[in-house]
Image (cartoon, rainbow, N blue to C red; front, side):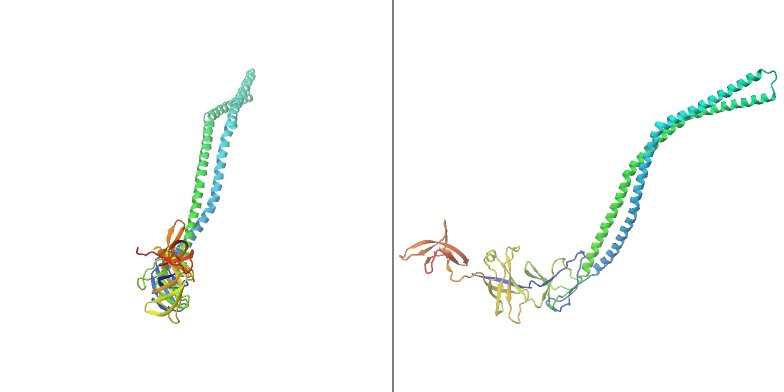
Length: 437
């Protein structure tokens, strides 16, 4: 069973595709590139990209990276004391609120009553002192009135006692004023002040417990954001440095540079020779380097039937128009596991190229492949086979010149002939109907 295919010469599998595998996303163009089909020695320049924009961005990113690191360091320096002061301020607020609450409760439970008792006791003492002084003055007067004459000493004693009475009266008035002022003004005022202090410190504590953690978390988030920005700047810098190291592509071995690439197993030449300032599409090969030691291969697209029929290591011949005299033997590999967008399957053919001759990449050849072969096979015309309830059958000629149908097992089909695996013997005559009816 043979198939005739049109195959295209393409670079070998170990050819080196040249593409921009940039990480930075900077748009680059070609600064210099070897001519299409030119020989390049190992280490020679295949292509050089214009790196001015990339180098400018590299410098800017290096500066941005330094600023990002400084911002992170500054934020860390600010965060550490803020965490400490926040903790301290919250403790102070809680302690102030607790003290104010305890003072207010202590005032109503103990101090107010004690103060009331204190001023009452002071008033009672002043009142009692006045009564005592008045009684003593009365007794002195009573005693001295019994004498007809009042001596000078007695007058002095009476005068002194009258002063003591006046002083006691003054002390009583002061005690009365102090008592009334304390009960009517000072104690209510202190009670209100303590209540306000308890309320204010409680409000301040609630505000601190709400605002201070938010401020601290905001600072932490700002630091985390700065760290993320620094990490992004670091990654951007690494990407730019990665790309900067690839601005010049050198030949890994002796070989030739071709403007074009292998896509889906097929050679796709460049629309025009690449030159300076030509833009290139990232992550897509635009040129191919072929090592001198690697011979080109043939690639052919098979239709569905041919792909199924092709056996691995099928052999055949390749014929190039104008060089039909060359004996070029080929061997196929297995068809690709997936089909191309047009529904065909690609197969690569290894060729034994004549000494001193190789085809041009992109040229085509007619390939004749023996996709299947079996010695001593019985074959019949394909149109002699007819399907039936029990399978395939053919009509054979009998010795008495009659005919009969024989069930057969069908094998491979090649054009107008079909292999018969069982059901017929060599020498039997098969009656085939006229294909035209």
